Length: 195
Image 1 (tube, one colour):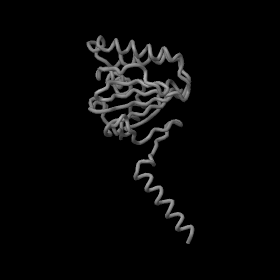
Image 2 (cartoon, one colour):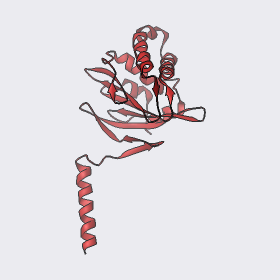
Image 3 (cartoon, helix red, strand yellow):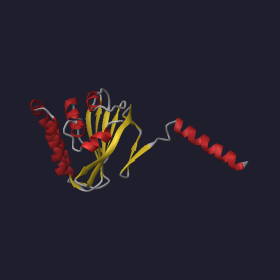
Image 4 (tube, helix red, strand yellow):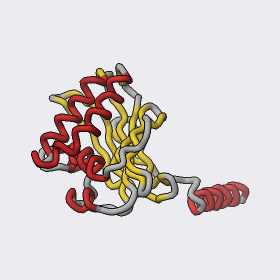
């Protein structure tokens, strides 16, 4: 009798916790946990997908893409209005300057030549931010997020890095590193897009 009552009480407490949002589901990708939903500065975002960036056979980082609603289309993810976020957690140590260069190359690979001149100031600033970090160690994380009315915010190791990037085109160009026609990793692109 006591066991049944206790089990019902535990089930009721868990149900109430989940109903109030205390109980959030997570997705584990190579030991990195991504929440199913997040509150980004007042906007509710859903985890569209998550995966691992590989370089040869080595795991480099885990990434999770958050959008206002799920989509399996890269074009829709890039053009969708509202808040967005890509969260990245390193799975190995990397020279931050090298990472900044890789991101710049990823933007160049996925942007039209006519667009590049507008993106150069943002790329220089972003490369400097990563260069100032010196090194990102396994477990370090950073996010790129688009906040309507504010701009693109780059947060490294939990600290926002300077003023927001005001141009939405720049934020979209960064997302193309993972979602563009020449992504950093085709399997990661597939993992970031909801099935």
